[in-house]
Amino acid sequence: MNQMTMPPVVRHRVRAWIGLPVLLAVAGLAFALHIGVGAKPLSVVTVFEALTRFDPNVFDHAIVVNLRLPRAVFALVVGAGLSLAGAIMQGVTRNPLADPALLGLTTGAAFAVVLATSVFGITVMALTPWIAMAGALGAAIIVYVIARLAPGGATPLSMTLAGASVSAFLAAVTSVVHLLNQDTFENLRVWLTGGLAGRDITLLVYVGPPMAIALVAGILLAPRVTVLAMGDEVAQALGVRTAALKAQLLAVVVVLTACSVALAGPLGFIGLVIPHVVRLYVGSDYRWIVPYAALTGAIYLLSVDIVARIAIPPREISTGIITAMIGAPLFVHLVRRRTR
Image (tube, rainbow, N blue to C red; front, top):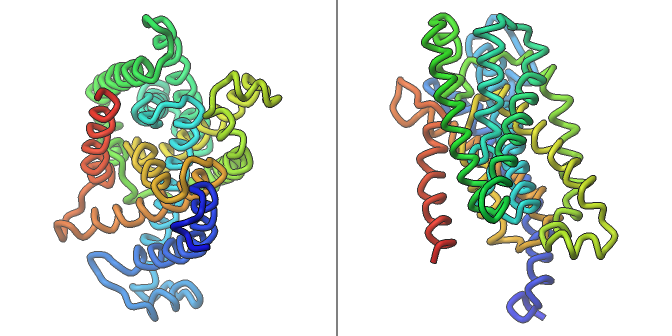
């Protein structure tokens, strides 16, 4: 039996098993390429020596270890985190337009960090992810309440509109806070456009553990997302405690979004784009969508950040600008398809 004569479910499962090692290999290649490519191209030998026999007196070694390696790690984990969060949100809400950015979570996390830094003077690095989590959770609650109050309740359309409204409002308030504190504006300007340049690797010490836990939890809960995507009634009939499960998945999404924002600022559309691309290959089973989204998102952000660094040398484009340029047309396409 060849793949063309297989039932769709079996065909997607076979393709998923075949594609997983390929995707892992591509992720490793993208990571290595990200380190080697830049304003100063570095050979594979130089990169390997810098990682295995680091010499602080060698300039190329310092570039690899102090600049490019942290940036590559951040791109890897942020791409995986936002993509996984987007996949879970789309499954739980049964909304193909769901995304941490479109539903206001990234803007809420960024607003909380800016407010804490500018108004309250909180600059302790260890508190950054927790402040971002509070902001993301607060934004999620506000969006849900607004959507519930709309005619028809919390439909995909009302959630998207509420998220866009909350995002716009919080972005405007963030701009006002910047105008009142120019020092903070200069420090956070690049970060707020969504950028991976110049980030301190020690931030990963505080962000890494909760993000790793959330990534693992998201993958472990993925089979239940498939059940939730069928509807609450079906899930309850199968014995799933939907309220408790949704609370757990919300926690996963909030942690992943907040940690990603803490590392790279409010990057948009990654959680929207990647799950849709993944579904074309593995189908609608979230047991595969979630891990595939994490790997594909990591590859995507690594690739986008390479483009951001080499597009207009010697200058650099903010990574968030590239993700918006790619994601915005897809968002318009999805909206048009749903309104037909």
